[in-house]
Amino acid sequence: MSRFFMQQGRVWVLLLGSLCPFMAHSAELTLIPNVFASYRDFEYSIGGGGIDNKLYSLGIGLTATYGRFYLDISGEKNPASGKEPNENGNAYFEREDVAVSLGYGINESISVFAGYKYGETSIVSPPSAIAIGSQVSLEGRGLFIGAGGGWTVGQNNLLSFSAAYAMMMAQYYDSSFISDTKGDASGTSLGIRWKGWLSQHLSYDLSLIRHDYYYEDFDLLSLDISEQILSVRAGLSYQW
Image 1 (cartoon, rainbow, N blue to C red):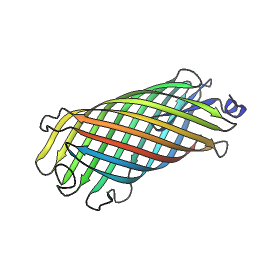
Image 2: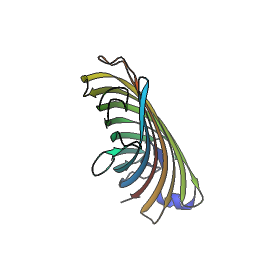
Image 3: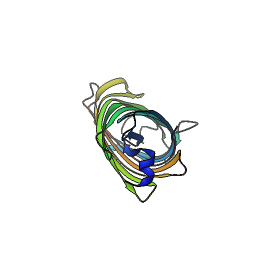
Image 4: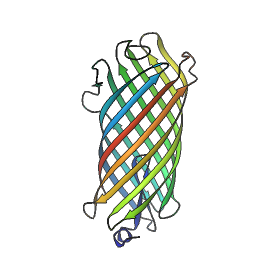
């Protein structure tokens, strides 16, 4: 481990696209707020039809560490008006995500975690733009588990990765004929991050994150739904 990271007394790992550090030795409580911006390539498919869009999102988070344990809270949403038209101009997207995770550092490079997440996609479009409906809302909420690791590069940088699996409950709304229906959902998240320090307390990070969600077994809908989200993210963090 480099002298810089030994002085900081911690190794940083990327877990579910959030900044999740754990202390290697110190039992002091540390708080790390962070902000980030994302470019998200979004694909939504239902039955034999689908639609895609490019979203620009803003997010905030807070990580608390104590010894080898950490608690991370983060949220992300496309900003201001909340809706963005797709390339054809015939559909408007809105996406928001919230996650809470609790993790433990097995050693100075590997960490495991579990938590709860919520995500909602809203689309307003003509019936021809997606398989069914002109106003659609799809929610997924439930538990996830995962692991991540990281390695120092040079003096002040870190390359890290994460992988997670989510088991969720789904809820679907379609203004054209379904008021509300429930189903099951599952998904995977894969992420890789480059992190560097700007000062003793301020750091930056660049991330590539892939989410794949699958919704099925609805009680009032015979079609399955899938979402693929590829995010390119840049963030800043401050260690108190």
